[in-house]
Length: 106
Image 1 (spheres, one colour):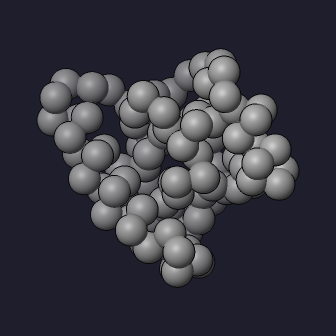
Image 2 (cartoon, one colour):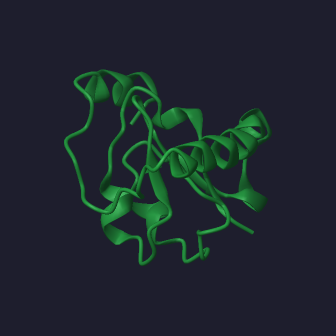
Image 3 (spheres, helix red, strand yellow):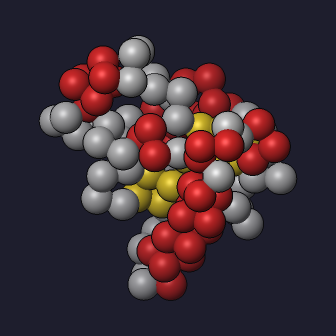
């Protein structure tokens, strides 16, 4: 089992999750972060700190986010294969984060 960052992160890119992660399994895309499923240890530390509730255990993933499981796996591997390293330090969210968070109802 691994955790999945859903499309709810897209446009926010809050990185509170990377600070609490005991392993380096988060990778950064331009508009969101993703989890490499082979590196995630299922500790659940990231789930509670996400301000937009974008992270789920794959067994708890709502059906509308099923596609995000493959998206995380493929994109994380692409970033890693291209020499990108896991993100481990919190960064400022995107300029659109507050607006996106409000649109998601948080």
